[in-house]
Image (cartoon, rainbow, N blue to C red; front, side, top):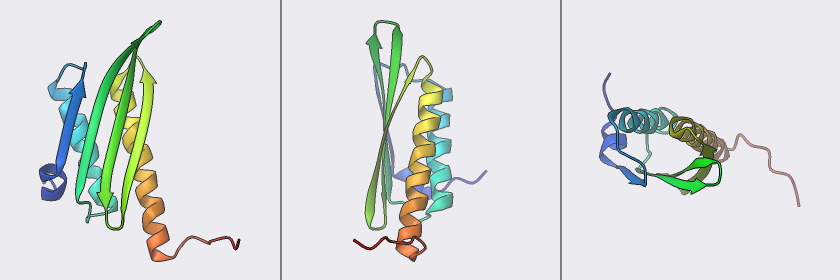
Length: 114
């Protein structure tokens, strides 16, 4: 599968209190690459995955910051016990926000009068 040069070149991954693994890296890279399917003009993607301990175990916090034409999309997502689910859900939320932003740019969203 050919990788998008923009997604790979502009991807920054930061892990805090989370061990780096090939599976996690590949999941993040794959999800970032998918975002370019929705907006090929994506200029950067910064992903921070953090583990925060709490009383019942670990909680994973994923922050995805995507720069697209005319906007910066920011998503924060938390999930207990599964870092892969937290990453998946954060990127799904980023995708939805990118789609909403693109609809607004195209004028495909009805704006309510004030």
